[in-house]
Amino acid sequence: MFHGKEKLQRKSALERDSELSTYGLLLACTILALLICAMIAVLTADQGEPTTNLTTEATDISVEEYGNPSLITSNEDPLRAYIRFPQAGGFADSVIMSWANKTYADAEETIKVLRETDGSAQGEINIQSQSYTLGKKYASIVEQGMFSSTGLAHPTDVIRTFNLDVEHNVFLENSDILDMSKKENILSIIKSKILASAPDAGDYFADAAIDEWLNHLALDREGITVILERGVCLPAYLGSLRIELPYDELGDMLLLDKGAMTAASSHTTEPLQQTEPADAAATNIPSKASDIDPSKPMIALTFDDGPSKYTSRILDLLAQHKGRATFCVLGNLVESRPDIVKRAISLGNEVIGHSWDHRDLTKLTPEEIEEEILGTYNAIKSLGGTAKKMYRPPYGAVDDTLKEASAELGFSIIYWSLDTIDWKAESSADVYNAVMNDAEDKAIILCHDIYSETADAMESVIVELIDKGYQLVTVSELLENSGKSLEAGEVYFDGR
Ligand code: ZN
Image 1 (cartoon, rainbow, N blue to C red):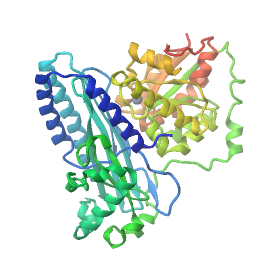
Image 2: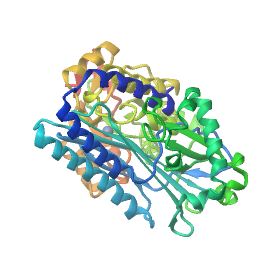
Image 3: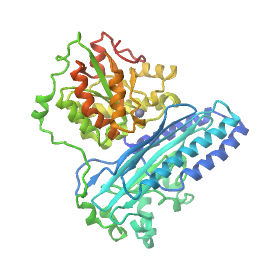
């Protein structure tokens, strides 16, 4: 399984290689350097954190997801976008949403400027989100990702963290979290942790922008996470580092109320029913594949971008009505929500990859494509998933290079025949209508298990599809029962 830090470090090594080989034009570089500076200035004016390293072992700190995920997405050139951020119905929503909108608008503007010189310029803004409520007092949100575009030698990091006191409805500053009169002590702890994970970093401490080290702090269940931005806090080749300062080691440098973190939240939204009795599940699960009648109509529902807090509800509904579906998950979310994935698998559903972090795979090097596809595949497999080598490409972006890379890796590409466009839905009725108006035999239907509208719609969609005589099967089952064999590098739209 990947860990975020290793992945980020490895990526930066790959980026170095590509820098050597691409875009040497002096004029272009000058213009681009200015643009990059503008992007960095705008996008990193705040704080942030990376993707993983968060264990899911139980501790005494009560942790649950903060809010519901929202997305800004665009599947179209010249700017593909995937910006994920939480909305909790609280005081912080508008600030977080403004940040997300501005991040998108800035990327859009940069592409617009680039296209004045190069009419074919394209880019991608891709931001993942992780958020936690710690007890009933604190919440922490980490937005991390990158902006890339044609002409840039490597992507620009985008990092932002928000730390909240949800009891008093205020944002926390660093000085609310740590005793800044003891800053030197804090920095020396960080130094020793950096050296533990990157021994040669010490050579650069004298030159490093140590004042930037505390730019991006986040709270998680183990301690305070310090995110050191690639090329800002330390030399770029070290990548982004994530340093964990365990609460217990901070002593009186920690100003947070640790007691409040261990108290259970008043508004529990954690959806997991991890303790689903095995035999209860067993009575609901149709015995795999043998229950399928190939002569009768069937449909493969697919859910992208999870796992999320809505996934469990969809799993409940499927189990209750003896249906199955295919979940196309993001590797970085699998790491932080392994229980949901395990449960999906144990109920007979299929779990396949949707890349590690929703990058546009057509813009990546073969090595990066391999990391995205195999990293996610291995994460799923380690949780007991089937070894079916297939994945769904983010944004539905596929080109010949990606097909070739997939063929080499032995993976098939799963597309869809019916897009519910649920990310635009204003109500569950929109999602319901999108499915029910166009459902047909052997369709692969694209939904996202990250929206309440989608989960709500499934209440009636699942029942009514079954009433209409459809068998709800996984993508693998659909293809198998349609006489289609999986070929590496091929794209599958449906079972027809
Ligand atoms: Zn997606």
